[in-house]
Length: 134
Image (cartoon, rainbow, N blue to C red; front, side, top):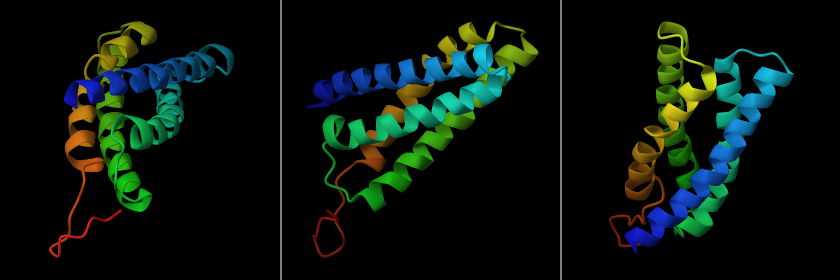
């Protein structure tokens, strides 16, 4: 089951990453925004796509959306903070090209997010009376 979830998470992550990178490039190259703003916009587009696919397909979560969505948002915001922190460090401090910096971020954030999503955001939950929250 873990290997199937990892495989599906990778597929969803690739789709989210494509959306994230596309929005990043559009914001920077077409609309003229800075790389940090583009990264945030890309993150938000990937968030919506990834939540739905991860809830129904990757983790087949029994949690209600109200329960899983806020947890997913918290995990994703932690990923965003890590993303922005790394982008700032790599682009502003080390003067890397924004696109290479974002590719580097992609190697770190998804691993952290998978673990938090699997074991917290989408994990089955039982209350003290043994009832699932689904």
